[in-house]
Length: 277
Image 1: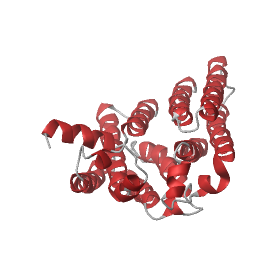
Image 2: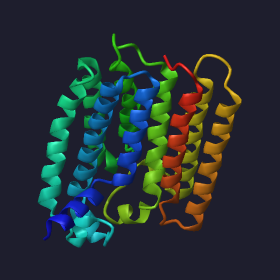
Image 3: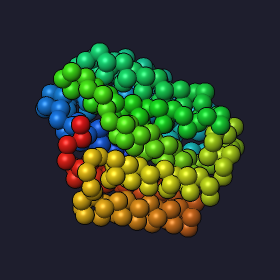
Image 4: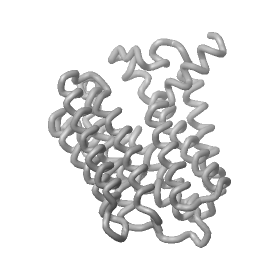
């Protein structure tokens, strides 16, 4: 197995699309909340390491199920990277997350650690239960909390920012799973979206993401600007288009990609809010 093939396989096993979106969104939030350059880099590095750990841990754990389901989009299944390499990489990424988080101070590092453990608990065992959405809610609520606590004096994050993180995570969970419902059910995964079914999962995803946008527009003090209201409309439109495309092609990733675009729009909404703290 060539080194290039292994590296590319390792990259694909990390779930690069959501990992990059979450890392970029966290870095932008760090800029918006007033973290200096070193602080922004610390946030990006911590979140990137955490995302890599979670993605690799997921594929390492699921390799047997992915093989059974014939998931040719999974590099372990296709032999592009070995399960052992993915597992070791997950452990290393998780190990460096905590010292990287400490660059933002002990309170922030504690929250980042809680977010990492919560995310790993989704991979096992909560993914198989009706509580599968809980790690997403907890981990995404932890993200803005981690960013804000890294500021001088470790200020308390505003409630609406933490709530927006929680609803973003919940919506992302439902959207992420929709295209894999059949494969997951075949291999014994029965999380909350599987119990609700594709239609209600799509409704839950859209509703939670719309709630995220509303929190970011109406949560900050003062009246929302016209630009913020336009962003809210844009996010809702993206979600509607993504939901429609998902219905037309149930095995596509349209809904999840719509969620990532809406999430970046939500970060942009923060830019229109002025001072977050």
